[in-house]
Length: 551
Image (cartoon, rainbow, N blue to C red; front, top):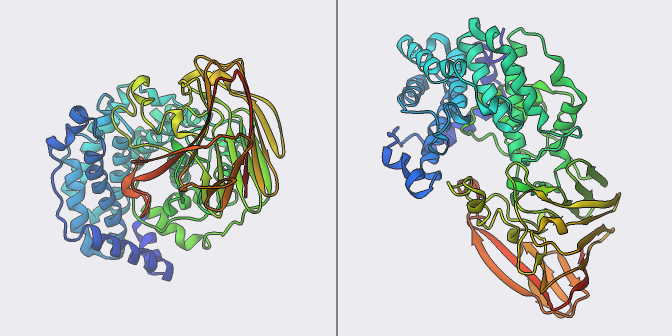
């Protein structure tokens, strides 16, 4: 019997863990949805993206509907009284003009249209005749018209992309076929499998994810959802999903963990704190039960991505999440030039690379220091997603979160780093405790050299700059979300103390910025604080400076 069948899930719902899971969903539903009727998505909300660049107002309402669907999936397993409400939200989603969000309106299929198809298809597959026949026919007709027919008659850029889109769209389309139109699946199997292979090509051989932990979770959990369902429906497990590279991809999230819930910050992947969604964790664990180790996870709260039925199944299959303690280790991703040093009392990470990666920030040479589960030095992370955020390069890099002002890298002759793959750094040497790089080529009017040595000791990190060929000024620039306190011999940054060998009084400024998903931010993180610390040197062509972070 298929794992996610109605009968199987009903039995799970009766277990102690299953009841607890469902009780959490019920409480969430009562607080957020029970007394709030399903409303229309007005055109005035839809067009905000085109008139004001605002993508969040519409998306918040759009995703709330899908979140409601995932909750009612779970509640309807435990109690038939929710079936009517489940049917109502299904009907409302079917009635939507488009399953493509305004920001992706130029596409014929996107992440969320394919995701919607998957959720509706799986609901029908699980609940079968519990759902009214007339609604079942409407779902099949709508999924076919909005997704299957469009997929079969068009090629898409995400067919061959190496980012999360390939896995998410591939999973959505693939499961729509397997659940609703299995007789047509063989015709598209090769194409879909090539899309999943393209997704894996976006990781280097060591498994590094350029997009950061949250996009790793989104893309890779969808990859796992598809192949878990494919295998459990009686198909042979393909060899390419068990390669050594895929095992490295699985381990990436643990390597990226810098403390209890602080992870690598680079590109659009930076958050003050992050925890894996428990439902996503179980989706990965179900396919890779031996390789994947649980990190600290968030509660089993619903989300628009619709993995709640797998979470319900997973809670009875696997033990409680592991509390993985941090161990002393040094990790170097050679191709992406990311160096991570974890010590007992702090963690350090820095990247070299280039300014032309996916979800790019201009952050060659940017680093992060974490102590006692708090970021001492950081970058701001993903900013608020707007039309301009994914507009032209000129628009994107005027935004604080994306340009190098929000990263701990120097400002050379008043200029920030430039965007594009040609603006890069070069690693000169690297060992267990140290990495040396020249980041001069990250600037348009590059100095002759800008070498930085990052060294990690037992209780401190030193950052040494060797600069040659400055025309007017060099600004040693650091970013923290901990309020700096200037003391006689340096700057107190929470549990760290910054000192330097320059006899210069630092300039400190403060700004508040909106994060990518303010609705998901914890109390005190909305908007986010960013403290900028600047040591400015004028009139010297050559400058050597050392900054020590005592930890």
